[in-house]
Image (cartoon, rainbow, N blue to C red; front, side, top):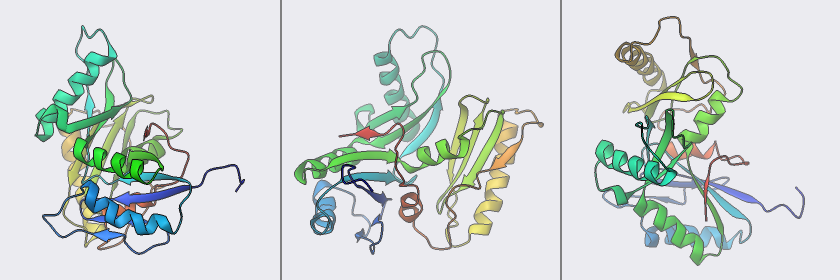
Length: 251
């Protein structure tokens, strides 16, 4: 690595685990604990003292953030209006208030686009820790990174699908962009084969709901990280922590 290139340290986080490359889990929460600035700081300070330079790339697992496809209504006049709409939609779909969600997206005013919503409290906690420790931060949805990898170079319409240790993911593309996206918790983290069988059943049902053409192919995303029984979503997310980052929120 060039001495002029800043080292990027990848971390993975889910609802209960915070993990880093080459280290034991930095922290495992006991419910009902949540990721506050204080809790993150207690885990990150000693780890960062052993490194002390570079930046953080944090991959947020699917159990901590929400995903959907937004279909913008006619008449929208600005990106600001679209941002407000997606915050309202996040609150409608997932609860809480619009201000409780931070939305990232491949913004489009005239066609469907994929969105990810992270809890504002989680984003704020990471930003405050990064500020305290004077480190640059990229905070990303691991599922969104995986989606970009799965669809990289793909030009044909159809479906791609995969399982994580806690979530089944199904995405439909028209060959240029994602037009439908669904993420379902499967609760089968102790049995990867059963999770994949559930994925096929979920995909079959969702295709019927969307009246998708039977000829549209469904392609498993084989290039994404595999996972084993009892693996945490944070460990799965961490495997995606390879720069460069695309569409990341930075601080």
